Length: 487
Image (cartoon, rainbow, N blue to C red; front, top):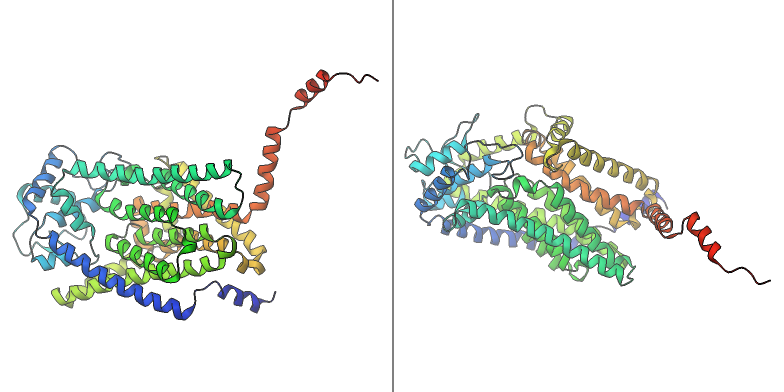
């Protein structure tokens, strides 16, 4: 096979240009419409009385259910990351500004650029109400802030501790329930003698992903938080969709629209805490789980289209929000917001090596509280990816015949690419960005097993034979019990 033929074959894994472009346009329109609905919901939430919410938050501070400390290292009761939660509480409690302004960009006290203490500010606002000095007000324009209206509704009817307990319970139930469900499906099919890859690969992949998320995604430290849960829960819901829906039965349009909705929801709740990179990682992993049999090329095409639909919807939602915000606030905020985003990209000379070192220093959040276990998991995932790439390189002329492996490679590389793009943010917030490394772990294991499946299969058969074969002592005893030959 020539190099030209190989490239041509790889191009066959891309979605059709005409129909793909049409559905991407539809995805953008859907995202814009959903953004309109989201703004209306946020506007409705601004009409709720803030006094009961502030009383609710004040009671939580008094009871020790909220802390004045922004970062609580490996805390499994209040959560490790209080900074974002306190920012959200400030945005929920602050009713200055018009309802239209707060629906688009919630208001907070003007916190200092350095040494910001939002948890102390939230405590004071809960006790005394928002400061009425107009100069002490800041509108937070950089995000869509979908978590603000949902948190507002929840805290208007439930205590803080109840909401956090519900978050933790829902996160655990979704992830552990998916693991149990897919493990049971896989076990029953194996017991029934099913051996074809079409029936076994998806539950095996979903069980692997849910196991990694359950154990190594830092849920004990982040599942109860207002910021992380409301992003994470949509990742968990998507995993359930993958488990319950056969993507091979979906047409191009249904596939694009499903992932456009997923992209909008992810962007709506994104606080730069991992929704986008992990969403893309899961999409590629999901289509790899379906890339078996005659559908493998079509699944690669649909996987690429789904990632594009996801990103088009996310970008469209953000653009619509910013365009409407300009109409309400004027364009002056664009410069400072763009400058802050530039900091997250480039920062102060941060390099990928700085990011890697900082992530390893916070690896306890993926190692069940144990730094060295977390570091071993991250480095082990990197080693599996490197070993798999070496194997694939030796088979590079047949890459077009390996859509599953290619999708898994792309899935495993999403998080490292994100780290390289958002270098400063990834390094500066390594205590939670390290959680993204789970998006390297399960694709790395799946890729290694797929690429080395022949050797792995031989090893498993050898182990099974060793376990089922009688030992030499047992064989001698068996022969001694055999009756002697009458002759």
